[in-house]
Image 1 (cartoon, rainbow, N blue to C red):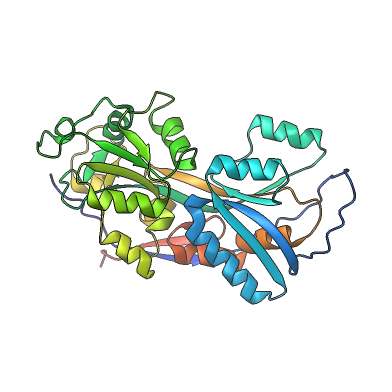
Image 2 (cartoon, helix red, strand yellow):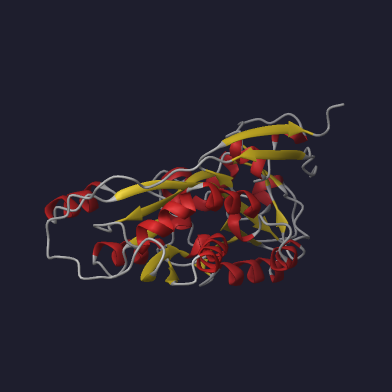
Length: 320
């Protein structure tokens, strides 16, 4: 099978700032916390798909504000939202906004949650380096994830790899939800699917099983300057994906590079949100404002994701 011929694209950003301004209409018990936007302690819960970028955000914020202590826990999306709804944390980082039931619960509590976009993320499809099927259409992915295609020979006609094993990061993850919502459209997943318990474990499994295919948040493989990312990329192959039903040339297949996420041409895209239930301008609000603001957005840019705010200019370095 032909390999993807991806153009080199440079990205320049002039980031603007986005502050989580406004006043919550909280009318519950008085808040006795003493933290401020830049000091004190706060707990936040983060979808583990975004662990690399949020660790960078937290580390930078705490270096800038030594009096601040942010305790971040990284969990599957479903558990993150449970933490937010049960007031275990004041800020959650997830790849969706509140659903109707969650909003209704906040309305009952007379809390006005604040939501800000943090970044544009993507989902990467990874296979073993020996697998020749490095170019797939969205339709082929649908067949694989629903079990319509159970053998690699059904994908490209090439024999040798046998049955397809589909690997997700964890149970109840945002990745699983995305596949069921956006790819399988509610259809049941293939029976040859399992969770690897973490994103690094997923990459390790695909790297040692030629018949496996995994789906992982781009954040784990997007920062090419990170030694851990380079190690991951040396172990697996990133699949080029085309939204076209009948692609005619290699350039019709795209990998989840930053520019293609920004241009909205890579088909497996999603938004990343900060959701705060904080009833005042405390440390949770301060951190969320930082992450969605100028300095935080530059960290997003460096990570290989697309900043939610600011102006981006895409430069095709192949043009002369």
